[in-house]
Length: 299
Picture (cartoon, rainbow, N blue to C red):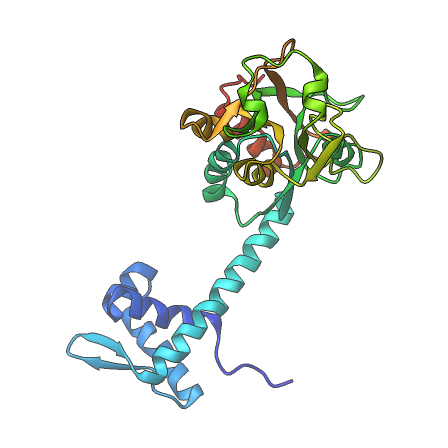
């Protein structure tokens, strides 16, 4: 295997000369002598047999070949920097990747707010978010498939949970749907005669479909956004998180149904760390950011 003709240091020097506008400025930023930078660039050009820079007045400019090579060099030096950072992170126990299990009723805006605070200090940690429903969330926790979980309702047996937020559900249909004529629906039989939309449990084992009211006609979909599209077409009724349908109810597109004995449902979303013994510093930071976001004091 042939040895490389150039070094990363040489490419970093020429990048600095270009970025800072000349040898003198780059020398000051890199805390090196101007002559050492001149020598490094000259040697690099000699080794490659290509002129990379030309000096006009007091400023150095890239040649056409220099532009092409410098652009490619930035990818290489950045990759090496990230590789060295990853090595340091692994040495200190910082996780290179994290998986978050998110019950789909947890507001995406809240999740993005938390992760946007984590991103600037994430050290390159890759984050995967898995949307889950009902016992699918519990399954991920029990199998320790995720590092952090936000579950709806009580956590699986043997796990501690930190309540984060309550989500209210509204039973809704299209404003032109036959059910919209009722001020109060008093009999379950009334609902049973119409199509209900339910959300599919993500568990691989026996599952429960979210919000099913035993309607004889049932369509099962993967998430609430799909259910809302169907509702907007005038089909079916469904229990939907209040934040997702508030605007549609206010503008009259969808109608909130009043079911006698159950006008509203509520789910408490909680934060669960499936394995505290294996929790790393990145996971701990995200956990604290969730608590801070929901104004929960850490102990």
